[in-house]
Each structure stands twice: as C-alpha cells, then as structure tokens.
View 1 (cartoon, rainbow, N blue to C red):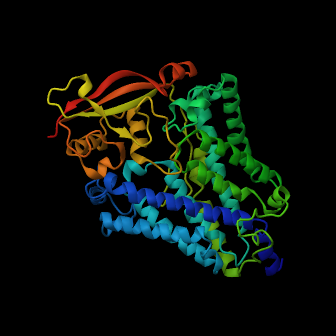
View 2: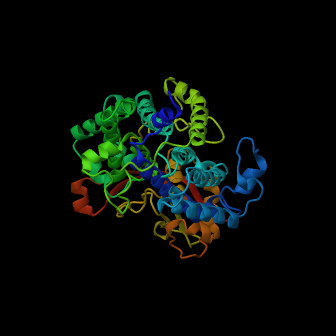
View 3: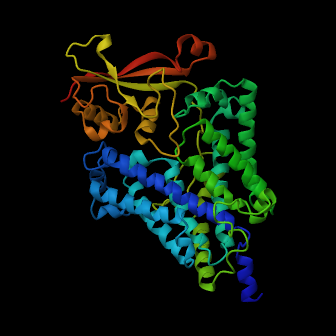
Length: 487
C-alpha cells in the first residue's frame, strides 16, 4: 500500500460534521464547567471554603493528585485559570482554532484539559462525579480530531466510539448487576421521583402509567446494552445506533437535572454519525447555521506527522483500556472510577441501584433564643426540593454542587465534615456560602441557632395537587442536627 493510500484510509473524511459538533459541543461544556468553578469553587473549596483546597494540597501528593495549584493556590488564581479556560473554550465554539493547522485545536484542548484537571484534582468530594472524569477524558481526546486542514483521523473517531461504549454499556451492566428493580422492569416506578435533582417535567414523568414505566426501563436496557455494540458496525447501522443513544439521552435531559452528563454523551455520540447519513436525513449535509461548507469534502488526507501523532495517541489510550475492559465484565464492577491520576480511559455508570424513598435534609435557622415551632425558618436551595409548593427548576447542564451533595447527605452520610462546616457558615452568615442558596430567610444577619431535619418527600398526586396546591407531600422522619449555636 502506498503512503497516499494509507493516509486516505486513515482519514475519516465522512465525519467532518461529527468533528465540528464534537469539538464545539465539548468546548461549550467546558465553558459551563469553568463558569461553575468561578461561581462555586471559592465558597466550597477556596481559602475559606467548606473543604479548603490549600489544606488538601498540603496533606496530599502531586504524584496522586497532579495540579497546577500545587505551586500556589488562591481564589484569585482559581478564577483567573477558569476565566482563561472559558476564553479558550469560546474560541473553539466560534470555530477559530479549527481554521488553523491540525495541531492548533489539540493545543487549545490540551490547555483546557490541564486547567480543568488541576481543578478536579483538588476538588475533593465536590468534584467526585463521573461527568468530571468524562469531560476530562473527552477534552484530552477531541483535540486529536484536528482542524479543517485535514479530515478527522479514523482512529480517534474509533476511540470516541469506545468511550461511548464504556459510558453506555457500563451504565447498562451496572444496572443489571446492581438492583433487582432494573431486572424486573420496575426501576422507573421510582427513578423520576427519587433522582438527585428533579426538574419541572419529573413529576409528570413519574405519574405516567406503570406499563409506560416498564417500557421505559426495557427501552433503556435495549439502548444501553445493545446499541453501543452497533457503533462498530458499518454505516448506516452505526448512525442509527448513535441516533437511538442520542434520543434516550434527550429524554433524560427533558426529565431530569444531571449536570452535563447527558449533554456530553449526546455530543460525543455524534462520532457514530457520518456526513453521508446527515446528507440522507437533511438532503444537504450540514443543517445550515452559516457553516454549510462543512460536510462537503472539507479536509484532505492528513499530513504524515499528524497520522503518526494520532496513531501513537490511540495506541497509548488503547494500552490504558485494559483495566476498564476488565471492569466492564467483572461481577464487582466499579461505577465512575478513574484508574489513573490523569482521568483518562475511565469506567462509567450511573444508578446501579434506585432509591425507592426520597429523603430530604431541611436546614432551618431561628433568631430566637427560645424558639417555638413557628420561629424556625428554612434555608432554600436553588435546585434541591425544599418548599413543598415550589416547582423544581431546570439547571442542567449547569452543576449545582452543594445541592447534589445534599442529596447524598440525605442517603446517610450525616457526619460529613463539609456539612458541619456548612452549618457553621450559616451561623456566621458567611456571604459566599449564602450566595450558593436561593433563599436566606435572615437576609444576611446571623441566626441564633440552626438545625437540620430529615423528611420523606413524594410527588403529589393529581388529586392532591388540585386539593392542596402542593407539588410535594412530605413527612418528618427524624432530627439530624438538634438546635446548635455558633461555637
């Protein structure tokens, strides 16, 4: 085979639209992630945060948690790093690096990856979510798709399909292994009501008839356990499989708040959809938006040096895949696990077990030294349920980290250090902490005492909603933290 023939074979010239969607889409999610860090990191993990990053850096090693902030951490430096990350990501969304040589998008994504890795690796429990590793892995790979100078490398398209395979098939297997309700098709009887952060549609989805929920669960199994295999089939089979994955992820977007998990899955799943399939669907390839030249043969065979670089990267990533492969077929499958400090080639999965009773921790304060029942006023969070009359809001792809940790807290981790410090910050009326909340009932003044109570929540039925006007029905279960003063 001649070099020119080899370069042509190695070029995925039928995936230029996929490249544009993936690069711009992942960059857009980086914007959300960096913006979240600017808004929330200082209060949660900053110099005076609930779990201060400087203290974490001092007691851990760079070998295990590499981060630029090991040289120096300050809240100002954190904000500056995130702001630069937003600017770089915005340039990709606008398509500017894609106009240059193939190495330019790689360089831009590499800087974003280093910056966000530096944040995640000092983020502790507030950054212990699977979609953080997913964004880092995607950010490290999609820059290798190159620019408009040459067609996308076939091996990188192939590895992105392997990423979607691990993400979807891993989630399907963890469900089948982890909870009987997934196997008997009853999981969706509970999921919409007990998911970490419901949205405005969640109640309507929960109130669908039980046969619909069983079909919903069966459809989930078909897509997660079957479609990932078809991504490695010839076209148009791979495109149809990718479309089904995208459709199921869109339903999750509509019915819940899972940060950017569903959005980044949708974006990466386009690696299975060819330009020819777009042309068959739309009649003219790329559907407008001012970039009509894309998908019309843009990009020729890649330069030899770029082929060598992307092939070496593929081989390195493939070598890191053996632990995730073993994990996928292990009876003790790990969910959302990173096998290296760089968060590359991770294991994924979600909802290996379904909570059947929703518990909520309600935090209250009082200005009275001898409070009665009516003297306690609740602090309201932005996303998590509290006020039974309030309809949940849509926040995804934005990630409300404190609200998510409150959901895990209600599952049983009452003595978490961060929560004790959170209550202390409320007693101090700490302004940065209060900005993370939707309602401070004391308008910046220090309460005399705070407490935390545990409630069982469920969606109001249609009849209960008409009769009471409530979105949630709730019953008190226990007092988690008795009335406490500032020490």
